[in-house]
Length: 143
Image 1 (cartoon, rainbow, N blue to C red):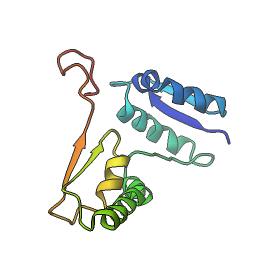
Image 2: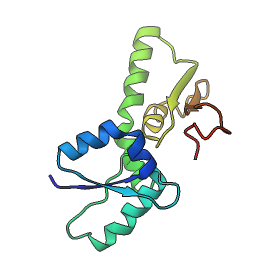
Image 3: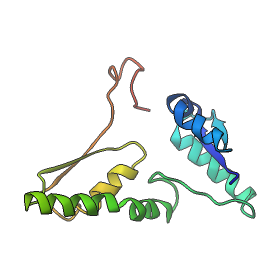
């Protein structure tokens, strides 16, 4: 299956093994240098390309970003994480957890696991990101 994948230059560098695998399977990985060279800019570039190639392409995204209905689709596809977590914790502990902690990143893991616990006020939902070596070092995941 031919496909074009837009990725920010910085993300390509961080995700070298994944990029290598995608190319092995025939993907054309397009490096987006605009802006900060990260996910946000890659999404924008893919959205710019889509109207020009809509007859032969479809916009797909695995992160909880972009115009409606994409974030909703990601939530619905990823919510099995939360459903299964809730089911197993209730089977094993017979109560809900005090906390649910998820990496934020592009959002699919967090939206997936949080979705089944949002209405449970007694469960604290905590999103985390890697801190690197501090915000002032340039060696972190912050934009």
